[in-house]
Each structure stands twice: as structure tokens, then as C-alpha cells.
Length: 173
Length: 185
Image (tube, rainbow over all chains, first blue to last red; front, side, top):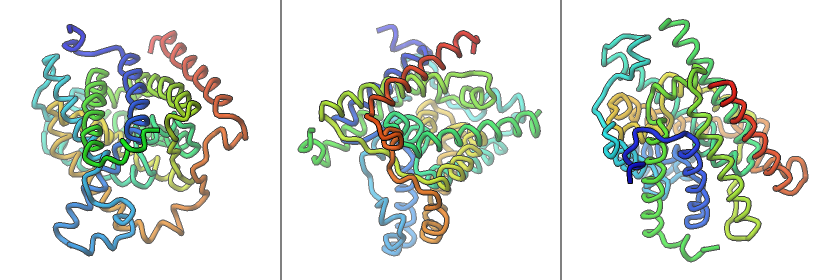
């Protein structure tokens, strides 16, 4: 079982594993892999705490009911699966600052935390605007040959590469 | 199709959790729960993200279409429009670079112990999704539906059998991976 303790696998093995997993989710659950609606449902659950039944009048939450569904459990499972994998290989660590970040922007924790929050807002907003994320469009949509997914994933990388170049070669360079 | 199984709500939640366990395991072992690996991709220095995505797409595409030809499953092609793809894609891309994780890999990053993901990023994604929900009613018709594709697939677009797209597409994606390796990326 040494391969379970390896720090990193070939990206091709990890990718093939995800591909086979997608066969099983289609077969057993009639679901493509996808993650971003879980965050939309969570925002609805939080809104429900403050606004009660009014939340359910929102047309978006009528479409994506604020409840724990298959995809929400999938995202919870990702946390557990990554934890298990990291523990088995000894790479689990509580850590605030990634290396590339420190090299470009320094080691002040709150700056990274605030930036991550702002990036998260764009990510949550953008993934729901686009109707999917790197898994929903990028893997599941493209493998089903969805026209919208192939175009969307192209723009994910246009936006991502553009923003990363500005951040690291403009601001942080 | 296993329609009876698909309707068992409680069991489906357990299956979702189990699928997530494997997904998270593969993401962590592949290295993409790390900010450094994702930014490495966006800065075009490390092609791990593209390699994982393309090998998942090739594998998934062949198996899923085979199961569909055998009538074991049905497809759920994603709807969308030029407006959702271009603007959504660009907003997402900015988030991808600034946050350094995506909605799936951030869950993996939390499992890895990364606190920038757990404290800043998760809250941001939930807030961003909530912000979108709050304006959705206003922008749906005038903005989001511009240039609608519907749930079209590439094979609908070209009026051909799905396999006439799947096989050449799989071949092209394999070639891209071979070229990446040849280029030493």
C-alpha cells in the first residue's frame, strides 16, 4: 500500500482516477462531478438564518434550493478525502502562506487572508455567473461535449492567466 | 439505468460523500490542492493542472459515451450563453488567480490544512455566490441569456454522431499531452 503514502502521484494517474470516478457518478447517481452549486446553496442556507422564508422568494434559490444535496456532500467528501491523502503521505500541515505568495508579496498573514477572501468573492460570483467551475464545466461539461463548457473553460484560463501575469509580473514582480 | 437507486435520497447523499472522498484523494495526490501548483499553471510554469484536467476529460469522455451508447446512463450537458461563458469565465479567472484555488480544490486545500483557503477563501466564495444570487433575478433575461447556446453539444452543433466528435477530440487531447511532455513542461 506504499502508493497511498506517496507524496504525489503522476498527474495522469490522478486525472485517470477522476475520469473513472466520473463514470461511476453518472452510473450510480445520475450526476456529473461539480462543486460550485454547493457554495450557492450554502449562501442560501446562511441567508435563511437572517431573512427566513424571504430567501425562498429569490429566483436563484428557487432554482438551487438551500439544502444539503448530493453535490454538497461531494464537496464535504473532498475535504475528508484530501485530509486522508495528506495524512497518509505526511503532507498535512496547518499553514497560512504558500511559497509562491511569500516570494512575490511577503509574509504578512492578514494580507494573504484578505486577498484570498477577495479572490473568493470573484470565484463564487464568477462560477455561478458561468454556471459551473473547473470541475462542472472544465471536466464534466467538456467530457459531455457541451458547447458552453468548452467556451467557458477557455475564458477561465484567459482570465486566470491574464490576472496571474498582472499580479505576479506587474504588482508583485 | 439504475433509476431506482438514483431516487434513494439518503443513499445518494452517502454516495455523494463517497465520491467526494475519492475526488479529494485524487486532487491532493495530484498536487492541485496547493496554491503554488495552481498559480504555477496560471503563470505557465507548471502544467500539472492541465495534465490532470485533460487526462480526466479523455478518460471520462470515452467511458461516459460508451455507457451512454449502452443506455446505462444519460448525459447532462451544461446550458450556457456567450454572456455566461465570456463574463463568467473572466470573473472566475480573476478569482482563480487571486484566490489560487477553485471551488473543488479549495475544499481539498482545507483538508490539507491550508488556512488561507479555510478562513479567507471559503467565506469569499460563499459571499460571491450569495452576491450573484441577489442580482440573478435582475440580470437573467437582459444579460445572461445573450447569445444562448442552450444545452447543445459539439455533436449537435456539427449534426454528427457523438463518437464522430469523441474519438478525434480524445486523440487531439492525447496529442496535446504528448506535446507538453516533449516540450518538457
